[in-house]
Image (cartoon, rainbow, N blue to C red):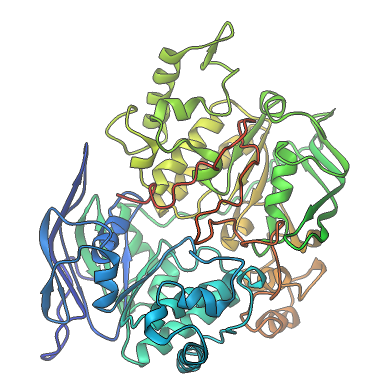
Length: 584
């Protein structure tokens, strides 16, 4: 492993991308400082770094979304100035964002040609071009499929095809495996190798070090906004890479000792919830859900996104009123209680989408500390908000949870995604909850922040906290959970022992290929490899027939309109400002 900046391509071929001395400042923070990055043509180049290191800002500069204060950008040997994403696209740069930007109510073909109608029209020529690209790179995209009918892996392939359709020769992929099960990750890596073999260049942003080492040709690590070194995957271990990234060893989610008691903290029995899809058809999105979580127990729910996990959380939080069944918290029936009452009774909530349900992005950090807990100390004193106490406690959270910020008066939007998440976890754990609902608690979080969040969950579990954990990170689910259940199309279809199950076996059950009690056997291993062939169960829909993970559509309409947020108040627009909370 080297501790120097990247080397240039062998021979005389100019690098696909060369960034020299890139510096970008925002009020109160230097996001990038003298960054140097060289990406060889026809390679997969991984960009690693902890949250707030400046990865997303750097890629926004390369994609024309931000202008650097200092430094130069050279593409294929030519120094350029990029004023907009349009300039970047014209120069062959394409970006697949972590949150997909597809319109659910349009077909794949319509999504691909949207905004690029001048290239190949909107009819037969466009269809032929899409098929040509899909076949050339093994993307297996169906032009006439409705996006709302596609699983997350298929949506991702559509996003990749979109940038290839626009002529991209260098692709930026931001956390592309965050929502994929292991079989889908393998399929994605197959696609990336196909792209590379055709001479395309891929810049791969990821926190998952094992994946980075398996797919990358070169690795550049940035820390605190500057380049700290490069690594050759064949000569580097995950431990070495983690130390280069954050100066510490790679954390493990493994929890060894059992703290499960026989005291029931949450009991859900026969929970049923229906939703009307856009065609007016009423569907059951939760179908007879029954589960029990004891004090000191972490119950993990595995499932491909869009199979009812979000609706289960919303029903327990009081954001949706179930049609049938009961929810009992610590002996009290809360099936139809308002969200605020549930909060006051001891439910902590780390939401799946921190922008829409966890933060007010344009409000300062100390105001965000109050969210969801306006009636509780230290935020409330004799029925009035205690701003001074809230500020003081926010400073404590920032200190204890290592939230990297210039101060508590800055807006939540100015923090990186990982620091936003640490603020939310700190807020929720500060009220000593009886039950913590943690939906994807470490999504988009670097190894340092990940270790800290895991430690907080373990510590609270030892003290008797009951945890409902929903995650797309199967290693996290297996490592932290005392009990595992698998959710598929609104039902709990399988259970597993975290001590023996493998991510591959769990991934197979998530696609509907296995049900009942999952036993770890060699025969199961073979089934896991062949049952799903790396594809998400097609045709799965979210509760509202929309996006599998609830992102905004291309037209900017928010799927959460009119839904109550986690603090029990009506959310006018869902508080979603896509991209503002990315790393800076």
